[in-house]
Length: 321
Image 1 (cartoon, rainbow, N blue to C red):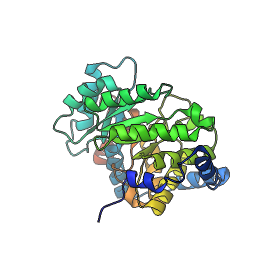
Image 2: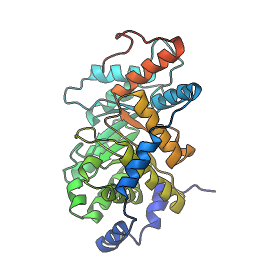
Image 3: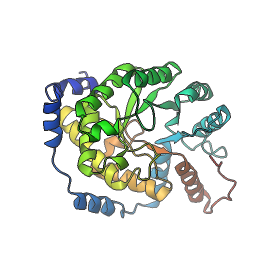
Image 4: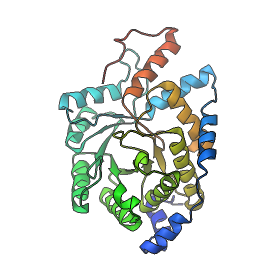
């Protein structure tokens, strides 16, 4: 039996996406979000405590879900190679520490990352489509994506045009995501970034989630990490509800990636609880859930070492990214 794919899901919504009016009717027909209830549930799940053995498992799981990221104008090949080495062996003193899921870089650094990660299971993710603003013509976005894939990217993190979305030009946003999905083909998985901090309302986040999934996203992602409000428990919970409901309706499983602002182990574990309690255990795997982070890894490693030895290491235990 052939498993449903994002392409088959897109086909299932062909009538919905046939015109601007039908797409608008569908998106605005989604149930409204109870903001108070959403935030209360996210806060409640964040108070859950876990046993010591479960915490050790959760730390290793969180490490394995990290897209170790550097997206700065001052990035150099040397910095990317150092980041790749850290992704493969996060703790050089303990080879039992899991590798991270991916290293995420700008397109011009993909080839460097790919060479540095050769022989490992760590993926190369590349931001594309005029990251972080997403304000470019579609041919430019397609070329940006094609260049990253040609250089060896396994995953593409694209950004939607928030201006078009907020103006209600939903079909334009849908068509752009679908075009990037087609450019990725079976060569790269596609993560679609909404920049939830700029979408203003939870209703918009729900609409963007369904729009991205219908257009062929393999992952839906909260943020670029370049604005004031990035991943929060509430907006991630809302997106987890969306992927859960989408799979119930289509049979297609979509991943979720909160990015930006998750800096320590306690916060990461709260997000894992959200995943388990909302979408379910099927998403507790780095094929379906990622953390977009850089500083988070250091704290996870410090907590991991504390659990193994009973004490914290000095400040030189982890590298400064």
